[in-house]
Picture 1: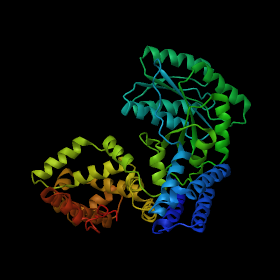
Picture 2: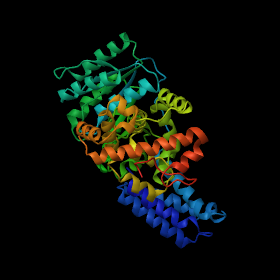
Picture 3: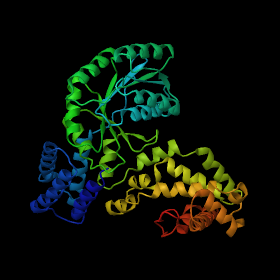
Picture 4: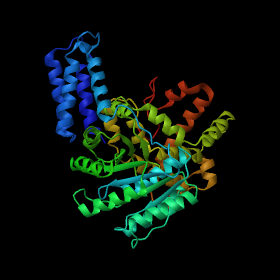
Length: 457
């Protein structure tokens, strides 16, 4: 999401970076580029107009004129106004209520409410250490009830059973009772998808809302939806009094206009953002970090948080001790590294959060095969015997043929992986002997600035 918008805004900002003085013509040209970029990203016209006007007022005032670096000052203004559109500050969920705290999810059909319910449960269990129960009141789609039950087991949440023959309000009553008896901290209610123009369905969700008395009512919206999704959010807010927004499918080919419009139009904070299909692919939404990401400045704070949450400290410590003792970096270690990278959404997700600049970023992010490449490499290592993983040098021609066949890959793929492992083994040896400076020099493209891990350049 935001890839095209990020490239266009980064280009506009860079065009001003070296200028010692800004004229009204400079500012006008830059704002025209920004306006076109926002309209192409499908941002609502009223939002674009107010955004551009606020930047113009600040840019033509003393704020930029008296600055020693006016180009940087204008970039800061654009960043600040993006933060303002996205909501100024992050808004965590409020649990200050008598348990079970009820969180209700509503939205249009196909927005991804059921998977979002499971992702939210997973996050509340892992990060907030809450005991969570899930219940579906989607009596119009029996498969949704079964899907939520399966996902509840996957994420370690409690599940309140429901049936398509029941009335939604009665399901809510039973779920509240079960949640109290199970001492659940949070009850997440997944509702049926509906169109905001469907009066009967809207009355049904209003009745569920009235009975559940949710502490948080979140509108789940597809990032790839058009401006009608913003209108739908407004209609749902009038019926349910929304407390926040969850953006789904933000990892897809979305223009990002919904994200920039929905907060400004509805006045409701964006709470979370779905960034993949996995149950842990839900990020807390931080307006300042997202604005930096849009302008190609990266989002290192989120990357650090992800590393803390998703990288196994035990495995990292074991590898460090192993290297200190002089034992080699084998293929099992490489597999652990690849799997941890995959847990973080693959290389593309990591690069998106690094301040590499718009053009470098987009070129890397366009390599959609990165995660598939990692999966294939893991499959090749899994196809080896424990002895082959421990001592890669014993892998001869006949063994390569067997390994390739077992992984469904070509012998060239096995050769490529072995070469990659050899490069990483050398890099790890340098790191264990002389610290990170030697490690960075060992990377491809590596001077002081380093490069990408072998095999991903």
